[in-house]
Figure 1: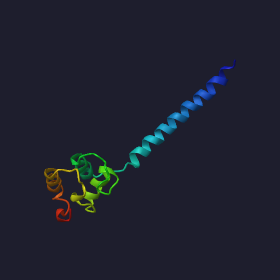
Figure 2: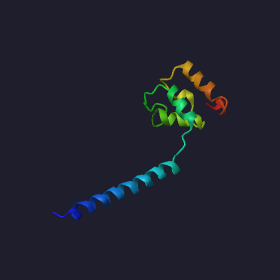
Figure 3: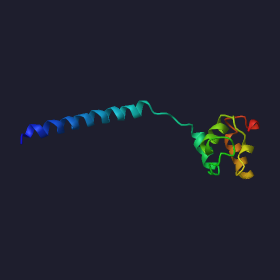
Length: 100
Protein backbone atom coordinates (compact mmCIF):
# COMPACT_ATOMS: atom_id res chain seq x y z
CA UNK A 1 0.00 0.00 0.00
CA UNK A 2 1.30 3.42 -0.97
CA UNK A 3 1.79 5.86 1.93
CA UNK A 4 0.76 8.81 -0.27
CA UNK A 5 -2.66 7.22 -0.80
CA UNK A 6 -3.29 7.54 2.94
CA UNK A 7 -1.30 10.66 3.79
CA UNK A 8 -2.66 13.00 1.10
CA UNK A 9 -6.39 12.71 1.98
CA UNK A 10 -5.58 12.86 5.68
CA UNK A 11 -3.60 16.09 5.32
CA UNK A 12 -6.28 17.53 3.03
CA UNK A 13 -9.00 16.89 5.63
CA UNK A 14 -6.77 18.29 8.39
CA UNK A 15 -6.09 21.51 6.48
CA UNK A 16 -9.77 21.90 5.52
CA UNK A 17 -10.78 21.44 9.15
CA UNK A 18 -8.33 24.06 10.31
CA UNK A 19 -9.41 26.58 7.66
CA UNK A 20 -13.10 26.05 8.41
CA UNK A 21 -12.42 26.32 12.15
CA UNK A 22 -10.74 29.69 11.69
CA UNK A 23 -13.61 30.89 9.48
CA UNK A 24 -16.18 29.83 12.08
CA UNK A 25 -14.20 31.49 14.87
CA UNK A 26 -14.03 34.77 12.98
CA UNK A 27 -17.70 34.58 12.01
CA UNK A 28 -18.76 34.07 15.62
CA UNK A 29 -16.75 37.13 16.63
CA UNK A 30 -17.94 39.51 13.90
CA UNK A 31 -21.54 38.27 13.52
CA UNK A 32 -22.34 38.14 17.23
CA UNK A 33 -25.80 39.43 18.12
CA UNK A 34 -25.98 41.45 21.32
CA UNK A 35 -28.93 40.56 23.51
CA UNK A 36 -30.70 43.20 25.56
CA UNK A 37 -29.86 42.47 29.19
CA UNK A 38 -33.20 43.86 30.30
CA UNK A 39 -35.00 41.09 28.41
CA UNK A 40 -32.93 38.45 30.18
CA UNK A 41 -33.53 40.02 33.60
CA UNK A 42 -37.28 40.38 33.06
CA UNK A 43 -37.40 36.79 31.77
CA UNK A 44 -35.82 35.61 35.02
CA UNK A 45 -38.60 37.36 36.96
CA UNK A 46 -41.44 35.75 34.98
CA UNK A 47 -43.06 32.50 36.17
CA UNK A 48 -41.54 30.45 33.35
CA UNK A 49 -44.66 28.45 32.51
CA UNK A 50 -44.46 29.32 28.78
CA UNK A 51 -48.23 28.93 28.72
CA UNK A 52 -48.90 31.54 26.03
CA UNK A 53 -51.84 32.99 27.97
CA UNK A 54 -50.36 36.44 27.46
CA UNK A 55 -50.65 36.08 23.70
CA UNK A 56 -46.90 35.82 23.14
CA UNK A 57 -44.83 32.76 22.22
CA UNK A 58 -43.75 31.88 25.74
CA UNK A 59 -42.13 33.91 28.49
CA UNK A 60 -39.19 35.01 26.35
CA UNK A 61 -41.51 36.64 23.83
CA UNK A 62 -43.46 38.26 26.64
CA UNK A 63 -40.31 39.65 28.28
CA UNK A 64 -39.25 41.16 24.95
CA UNK A 65 -42.70 42.71 24.59
CA UNK A 66 -42.47 44.23 28.08
CA UNK A 67 -39.08 45.79 27.37
CA UNK A 68 -40.38 47.15 24.04
CA UNK A 69 -43.57 48.33 25.83
CA UNK A 70 -45.82 46.42 23.43
CA UNK A 71 -47.09 44.05 26.11
CA UNK A 72 -49.05 44.57 29.30
CA UNK A 73 -48.16 43.06 32.69
CA UNK A 74 -51.83 42.25 33.26
CA UNK A 75 -51.69 39.79 30.34
CA UNK A 76 -49.55 37.35 32.35
CA UNK A 77 -52.16 35.49 34.40
CA UNK A 78 -49.78 33.28 36.48
CA UNK A 79 -47.56 36.19 37.59
CA UNK A 80 -48.08 37.24 41.20
CA UNK A 81 -48.83 40.92 41.97
CA UNK A 82 -45.60 41.43 43.93
CA UNK A 83 -43.56 40.19 40.97
CA UNK A 84 -45.45 42.56 38.66
CA UNK A 85 -44.37 45.42 40.91
CA UNK A 86 -40.75 44.23 40.84
CA UNK A 87 -40.83 44.17 37.03
CA UNK A 88 -42.27 47.69 36.98
CA UNK A 89 -39.59 48.91 39.39
CA UNK A 90 -36.85 47.31 37.30
CA UNK A 91 -38.10 48.76 34.00
CA UNK A 92 -39.03 52.20 35.41
CA UNK A 93 -35.68 53.89 34.61
CA UNK A 94 -35.73 52.83 30.95
CA UNK A 95 -39.38 52.66 29.83
CA UNK A 96 -42.69 54.35 30.54
CA UNK A 97 -44.20 51.88 33.03
CA UNK A 98 -47.59 53.59 32.91
CA UNK A 99 -48.10 51.82 29.57
CA UNK A 100 -47.35 48.41 31.11
